[in-house]
Image 1: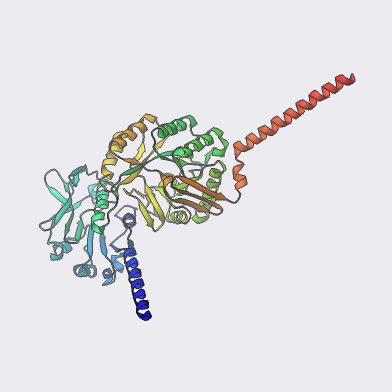
Image 2: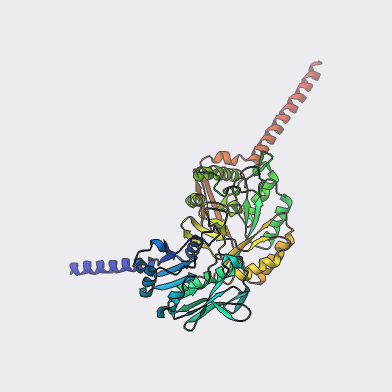
Length: 526
């Protein structure tokens, strides 16, 4: 009897473990690519697409077509084939695709022979179309703003889709040109872009391809950019008062040290600024560390780069780990000295190389902005949704609406329309203190009218851990620890107050002594 009970218990335990493992199993996704770069451009298109898949809780692998081994794709739940160089697929990959039973997605060009096969619907290639002007998706139409000229391969492969379902299409004023279509579990994307409306449409379709749904709540963040020791504090305060009155949480991209003419001005040198930042932090603001000085050489703080040498198109140091630790640690100590607690990082101009990202992943839970997707030049990719646990970032909070300034309100609204085709769109915009606040108010009003909610960074779990500094947030509360806490508490205004108290005390003592001395002189007739 006991033996049967033990066997039954073991069977139940094994079943529960197996079920838990099955639930935790992540789909395995493979990217097969012919080249990483479009001709004449430095953006790593494979990396840009791979990072987008980080939104979907899948394990992503990649292999070049040249290195592909027969039968390899059978180990994956879904296979993406990225065609950038117009060459047809190799026979090794082609034959494996014909036998493959999982989900297949062909993106780009070079698939004429594949699409003629019965497994892909016998679609006939009609040539290349260079005249697309609009793109349609889910009954929504958008202008197809083409970045490349005809000489730069600005075309769409045009197929006659007799079998299957067209998901999205271009128009050239006369006819429809399929952009994304499917036949059974085979998907075809006739053009690959890593920016703009077509990229956002592809990002939304990926939900259906990978069968991963997300909550359809559209949120945005507001960020006050480039706040430093020389900022106009009154204008900064007015922005904080407005956002507080409206109940809108927001971010502040903080530069702790301002360099000018060889001199460094720290935020701790400006008492009014620190008191204002503390007030804002207590009333809706989350601090995002925006470098240390936001410059490398003699550039003006806020205009220069810090973690990318834009003049030489390379990292500013061969030892980025040491370079970043030095600057980021100084920045954190300056913040803590003033009672300010960053929760995320934003590289100046979003410019930083892979080594820099890997440093950030070890020490920051959260990164805000674009991703630099090139090691050869300054190229960034803007994503329409949050991305988690990609190879060199723990969590990305994407900015994709742009910069609010006097004459671009309509541009911001167009960006909202384009990016919001993604069902779980998430994004943000940024605003400088020197811009008229009325433009920010107008954008806030438009966002509210369209039903958007505003993202509060500090409500989520964030952390920064570097050397002896640890800052954490959760449910709106911030905790921090630093073993030299006594040094932090003695910030400049505390020292000023202490010095003033001591001065008054000494002065009072001297006055008392002087009065007493005068009294004694009179008493003794001196």
